[in-house]
Each structure stands twice: as structure tokens, then as C-alpha cells.
Image (cartoon, rainbow, N blue to C red; front, side):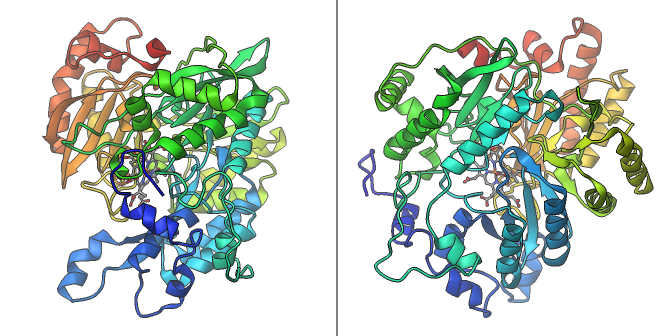
Length: 561
Ligand code: SRM
Ligand code: SF4
């Protein structure tokens, strides 16, 4: 094992190398009833199996005072490329959420589900249950290719079908090959020494860090393609997908006060025909495998490899591995990165209903309503990377039935959400996320209500606004692409970012630091007043703050393309 930097490898590299292809001591640790936790190294390896060890942070202090170990619990993330889930799979996840988790399903910003609050004794049952529903959790987390996201607009098929097929193919191609997952969770026959497992693509130490892929279909950028390590932008010519423009090196994560870490938009490096998609992805993944920084995990994402080695070098290396020159990128144009809301009908007459789920948290009447719908629904469900749910493929005769179920549970599918709610995203943060510095999901409804009141006072109640909140700078709700973003700094305090655009092609800029929620509203009030008076026709708030100099302008991804 070596690193390109000449510095010693990070501890995680030794852990992976010595884990016997991700087995570690997880199986034995699950049996150990003395603690609700796994050993430290095993908790890290567990991520590759799609689960995070967490503890209920609301209870930390109290349990410490009573000399109890933290309230350990596990988050389980499903691998669901393109976010498509059949009704019976939905029912299986609903049951697992009620029986073994905290009674909620959480739609993530990568188009899949998370369960929270699973106890160690129920972890195996939960993961086995997900597999019994022909879903998986393998490689939903860890230093591998994560859940592949894909444009979500089923009524645009057959183009949507093609992008979805591309997402599925990418997902399958980069699955780890180790049998550890089957052994631990599905009672597969253990391999006896010498271990014969191998990872032909990843190798025994997998990637230096996580890697994220997504497939976009312009004019919709509902997956935020420029935030992906490797993004494919479908190029539509004569009504068919002629191929994909390839964008590399996107990423959101950074740390406060560490300028060596930063959010970065992906660069468009060329075009590839559909049949070369997997080959190209493999070349990108193996460059990152071979050249990514394995000594410093804060500097190990593809975006840093790209900036350290240079875009020209990267393109050259890519072409060397492909054995041919990359074709130049073709033109594309994105209009927005949000989801449509409400009912839409496709050319065959079927209906699709996109429900706005605040922060993607499905609980209470929403959980019950969607369960009831899943019992009767003959189409499928599609999760979006904006944390929403589309009930897709509803036959015309069944639309009224779906509406009636929703209405019985107090959900009015016909009424659009307030725009601030419709396009808002938030990460999970407290109480489950171990890295949260401030509230996010739990503060969002109150914050949006205060902002909505301000907007209404200024006559801007119907203003479309992309607002994103995260509990720390890691960027799980892709805040640096929003028109307004709050990024957690310390309990109750946020950095305020302004100036993203409506299509997810521009990074915003920091405007003020360490503000309380109330300070944020006070800081926004004069800018919104100015906007109410001085905006140009159709001018978005994110564009206005740049034009008026509230934050400095920087190039966007399309200008870099
Ligand atoms: Fe994330 C870590 C939640 C999408 C960047 N993310 C975490 C962890 C696992 C915390 C941890 O490491 O202990 C969070 C679990 C919280 C919880 O209790 O559930 C977490 N991330 C999420 C989710 C659930 C946010 C959401 O509200 O939906 C999203 C799950 C995605 C999925 O289904 O796979 C989620 N995370 C993202 C995204 C958005 C995306 O991928 O489009 C990003 C920014 C894009 C990127 O990766 O650059 C993101 N998460 C991070 C980072 C920063 C990585 C970096 O390069 O610095 C971390 C921290 C880390 O990896 O060390 C992180
Ligand atoms: Fe946790 Fe930070 Fe991600 Fe929010 S952004 S889920 S606080 S890691």
C-alpha cells in the first residue's frame, strides 16, 4: 500500500487492508450483548455495509451523568439507484421502520431511504429484511461508489428510462465484489482461509474516499450534477440521447476555517457515447483509486486529486486509460434544479404525483397514507434527490382513490406548498448525526415560517427561493448551490451564504458568519426589501444579490464548460 503523497497512509487505509475484504470483527461484534456499540474499527467498516453507528445526542449528557454508555443506535441506508422502489418494497421498508427503527422513513438527498434508531440487536434483521425485499444496503456508505442518482421525471420517458438504465448500470458496475456482506448479514457460507475474495476493480483498500455519480437530463438538474464527483449530462439530439457530457470533480464538503477544504463544481471534460459510459466511469474511478490522497482523508476526494494534478493532466490520463481522445463536450442547458410538484400526466395518460416532503422525513400521517397507497398502488414510487416522493404510474381510474387516501390523512395533494417550503432542503443533523454542530431538520419548519412571514410582509409571498440548511459544513443538503443557505457553525449559530442560482450551476458565497436564526432573518430583511423594490423582471433572488454586490460574483459551471 502506498500513497502518492509519500506521507504515511491514513489509519483507515490500514484498517481496510487488514479487514479481510470488509469483514473485520463485525459478525462477532453483533453477537456481543455487553455493549450497544461495535468496536471502533468495526464501526468504520460497517459503513461499507450501509450502516453508521450513531448515538442519540439528545440523551448524551444525561447518560453521561448517570455513567451509562451513550444511547447507541444505527442508521441504515438503502442502496436504490435512481430512487425507484416498488409498492411491495415500500411496504417492507415501512414495516422495518415501524418494527426496528424510529417509525420514520427518511428520503435522502441521494434519492434513497435511511432508517434511524436501529439497535444493534436488530441490525442484522433490518439489513436482512431490506435484502428480502430485493433491495440492498451494500456500499450505500464507505470508500466506494455511492448510490447513483438520476433525473427523476417519469412522465418524460422514454428518455427518463434511458437515464435510469444508465444509473442502474453504473451502480451495478461499481458494487464491491467481497462476499463479506452476504456472510455477515445473509448467513452466507463463510470463506475459510486462505480468503479467496478479491476486488478486481477497487483492490483491497477500495477508494481513498467516497465517490458519487449522477446522471442528469437537461433542462432538469434535479440531481445537482455539478456536485457529483462524476456527473453525466444527457445530450439529447433528435429526440434521443446521443450520449453524455462528462463532468468531473464536484463536491460540497469543507470544514470551517480550513481553506484547504472547499466546495467545488465539477468541470465538463468531454463527451462520451452511451455505449462507452461504463468504460469511461471505470477510467475515472481507477484514476482516483490510483492517484487519490490516501494519507489525508480531508484531502482525498476526486476534486482535490483533480486540482492537485491539474485538469489537463487528468484529461490526458483519462484518454490514456481509454486509449482514445475524448470527444469535445456538446451543448446543453439547465433551467432549474428543483422538482415539479403536484399532478402531471404522461403521453399514455397515466398520472404521476410528486409530493413535497419537508426534509424528506416521512412520519405519522404521511407514513400511514403512503403505506395505504402502497397497498393499492400498481405503479411505483420514485424518490428524488430533493428529498421528495413521486407516486408514479397511476392509471387514470385510480387517481381519485389516491387523492381520497391522502385526504383521509389530511394531505391535500392539489394544494401547492408555499414556495419557500417547496424548494427547501435540509440535512438530518441532530439528534442522530455525529458531526452536527447545529440543528437543521428540526429547525427548518420554524425558520421557514419566520421567513415566509417576512416575505409576505414585503409582498413576496409567492417568491420561488432555493433555501438549504445543514448542521455543519459537510454539505449534505448541497447548501453551497442554494440561493440562501444556512450552514451550522455551533449550537444555534449559522454561517449565511447567498447567491446560488436556480439551476444549481453556481456556488454561493458567505455573507455573514455565526448568526442566530433571528439574526439571519434580520440580515435578510433589508436585502429582500431592496429586492422587492429593485429586482428586474423575472430576476431570481440569487442573481439579484450578485448584481447588487451583496456577495462577489464567481463563474458558474456552464461558463467553465
Ligand atoms: Fe452526507 C457525512 C447524511 C448526502 C457530504 N452525511 C454524513 C453522515 C453519514 C455523518 C457521519 O459521517 O457521521 C450523515 C448521517 C446523518 C444521519 O443521521 O442520517 C450524512 N448525507 C447525509 C444525508 C442523509 C443527508 C440528507 O439529509 O439527506 C444524505 C445521504 C445521501 C445518500 O443517500 O447517500 C447525504 N452528504 C450528502 C451530500 C449530497 C450529495 O451527495 O448529493 C454531500 C455533499 C456532496 C459531497 O459528497 O461532496 C454529503 N456527508 C458529506 C460529508 C463531507 C464529505 C467531504 O468530502 O468532505 C460527510 C462527512 C464525511 O464524509 O467525512 C458526510
Ligand atoms: Fe450531519 Fe453535517 Fe451532513 Fe448535516 S451536513 S447530516 S450535520 S454531516
